[in-house]
Length: 194
Image (cartoon, rainbow, N blue to C red; front, side, top):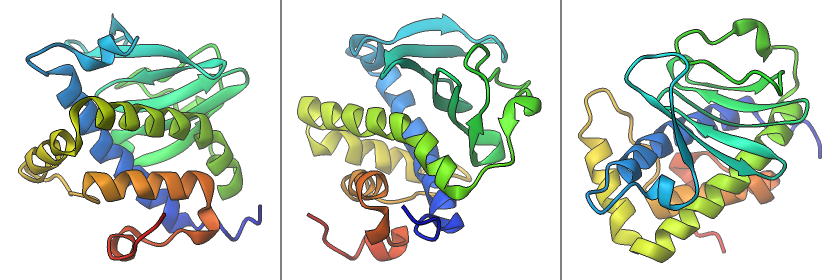
């Protein structure tokens, strides 16, 4: 893959998309019928950082997915990938033993000397989970569930609505599988991808 394919604005777009998804996952936790993350095999643990919050953890592709209210990522042998919501940024995490602690962030473990291609490659296990999980949500609840979540998100003060859920999933799939065909979300919402 050529480094020119992964433009820095696509990584910013990815961060915006994950931010919106994190709101959706929070809605999955709060479902009156039961916590859907737990139903899908996540274990709930108290946050190691911010009080009153939780960490949801699940084994995935030889590592683990961790979801907090303020960060989300995949961590495996040699490090991983994280989206840190207060920084509004995707990063390569350089430790496999220590994962992000919300509110502390351990900046020394954020690998700042990486190429866009390295960050893209580090994101793939997380994107594989995100796409898989969103397909499960779609299969279980239909498209109207995420559309309702999207409607709630658009009403959150200071929230920046991204793509509507069906197009968001298509964008993540394109980012994951065919980044050479990727376009900005505003343009993507007008195009049809198969």
